[in-house]
Length: 365
Image (cartoon, rainbow, N blue to C red; front, side, top):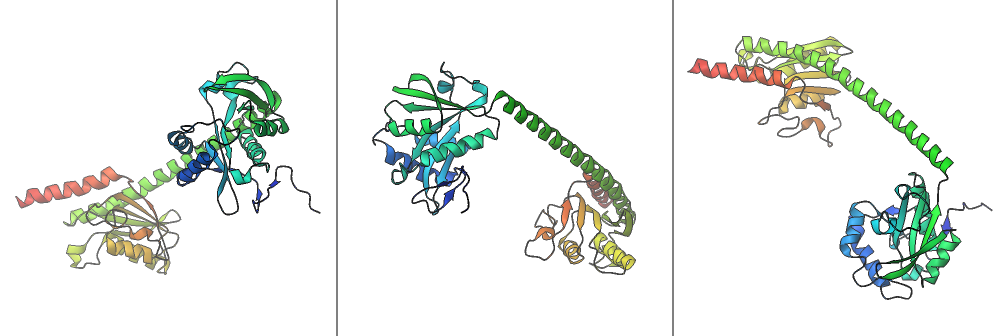
C-alpha cells in the first residue's frame, strides 16, 4: 500500500487530497464574506457583527494576505489571513523577533467541515508556505473558551506563551518556531545566492540589450542613408534595409512619384532585392529596418515574407500599420507574427521627415 506523505490530508466530504492554499481573488470576496457571516454567533466564535468587516477582508485580498482552501467543487471551505498586526506584534509575550515573525489571523472553517481537521490542515499549509519565505515564527491568538481551536494548536505543537486582553476579549497567545538560527542562516545564504544569480542574469540581459541596440542603431543609420536618397529626388524620405547574419541583403527607398507606382515603397523595394539575393520569397531569418512605420501594404508584405523581426524608427500615427492605426505585424489570426522593436534612432528618423516637409512648404510659398 502506498504510504501517504505526512503533509497530505484526506478530509471527509472534500473528495480530494488538499495540498495547498489558494490566494483569494477579488471574485472570491462575496463567498468569503458569507463564510464569515455564517460563523458569527456560533459557539466559541468571538467575532461580533462588525468583525471582520468587508473593508478589512477586501484589503487583505487586495494585498495578497488572505488565503483559502477549496473543495473539489471549488467551494471555499476555510480562510485565513497571513499578515502582521501592530497590536499583536507589540504584545510582550512573544519569544521570537517581531521582524521575522508573522501572524495567522481570522481563521474560519465552514460549519459542515468543522471537526474534520481542516483547521490543522490550513495552519500546516500556511506554516509550510511562510517557512519558505524565511519566517522564523508564527503567532496566533485564541479565545480562552475556544476549546476546539485550543486543541488544534496544541496538536500542532504551538507553544502557549502568555495571555492578552485585546479587542475587548481575553486571549491565549500561541507561537511556533519554524526556523532555528542555523536554518535561518542557510535560508538567508540561499536567498543571497539567488539574488546574485538573478542580478547576473539581469546584467547579462542588459548587456545583450545594449549590444542589440547598438547593432540596431548601426543598421538604422544605413536605412537613413536610403531615406536621404529619396529626399534627393524630391520623394518623402523613407528608407529601408534588410539584414541577414550581419549582412545587408536588400536596400530600398521611397520612389512612388518617380516610378509613378504605388508599389515603389522602400520596404517593397528592399524585400524584392532581398528575395533575389536569397533566391527565395521567404525571409524567415531576416530583420527589416525602416525609418517610418510601415503602411498596410508594406506590413502585409512583411508578414507574407515571414520576416523574423522589424525595427522601426519613427511612428506614423495617421497611416502606420505596425501599432498606430492597427498592427498587422501581430495579428494572432494570421499564421505568422513579426517581432517588432520601436523607436530606434527615432529623433533622426523624425527630423529628416520634418525637414523635408518644412522645405517643401517653403518652396511652395
